[in-house]
Image (cartoon, rainbow, N blue to C red):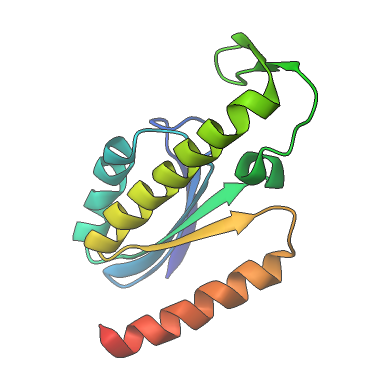
Length: 145
């Protein structure tokens, strides 16, 4: 039995695969903000699934990313490209929340179709809450699978 941490260069250094292997089959967890096209993400993780691993995707998002609760007009900087965009939150909020909702639903759909566990983790809430929710869901799914 071995354990390891693998950096997925396709997504960048912040996205890490943690795996613990038991014989040929393992448990692989991806912890990421998943700011990438859902098709590219599923293409990146599908080979791990095809090898018989149990995959768990933790989609980690800050409360601000989920709710876009900003009030004042500001300049937002893309952390990866350093590009700055002027945003008036009041006029952009509805569009942002729809885009985020569509992205999460696309990910959920892609992962579900490939029998990959997926859980959105709100960083403003205790981690044990997210883990409990995931384990409860997994227990229900194990009865169906």
